[in-house]
Length: 436
Image (cartoon, rainbow, N blue to C red; front, top):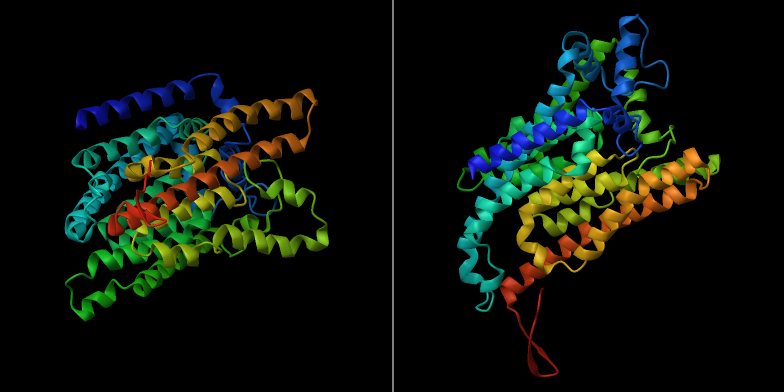
């Protein structure tokens, strides 16, 4: 298995390197589905240039990275410019490996949990149980789903800063399943510093760490790993990073150009999200109301109900929140979508119980093909308009919503059947519940 994974990494690296050296690199980098005002490397380069010329890059409406990101990216541009493509490839491969390690640990935990609870399962549920091959195959599928996902490859070739956000998120997931509180909070704080929305993951992370570390501990030790302690530690680390960023920039004004830009959505250039078209048509005096409504929907609306239902499965909770954020955030890109898609093979055992798989697959393929076509018709041929492109992005978002709800329903249905069996009575007659 290790040799197979190594070959996958090598092949994925070669594919990325070939595309980065080809004439398609700039074409990919200019695509609105790949680059947004928040993650465009072209904007990073211009921001670093302004900073070197003694001009504050946050004075205009061009640069939206944090001062810490500006410092790191400026160093990369000045000292490692000839190795930039290699750095992006290495970060992408490292992200895949972190997800692979996460899947290995998580699948092992699922098998152990199944062994402990097997006595409480119904007698006719043998076909629902995890098998040993799932322990070996699911991590490989996770790595493959990241390494060879077209959305992720385009994200890397376009050299977007989402590559580094995904790396921080992958580190967060790995530290979470390992139960390492401080490294998890630091990785999550780094992801939040860059993209804001990952802050929601502190809830499943705190639940997971508390669940993993408090078993068999004394009350005093368990308080260290309690959910509230993890949330407090995350807040402290995030504040330290923000303070450090303020010291680098000399003031706190960068908050308006970073988090203020994410929350207020002043740039309405088209992307794969839902904000741009709606607020293009919005009357200005209604804008604050709907900005609040859209941001609450993107960040907080699903947090409480999903946490109440999935508090026993923090990993599925974290993946669901990551997916919903990628759908509803103000400036999404294909790299965000590809990241959570790579996590889904950890629930490969649920795929047979999903009912919308074919429809969702068709939606993904059709919208991925139609998006660039409709964009060309709108911008270059001028034989279409914004409604056409927004229709494609709306269908793409709908497909993602169907995918998330379908896998959650499959999980609930399987858990119910494990404990109550597949046999049912309909009108007083025995009937078997078919999950496929």
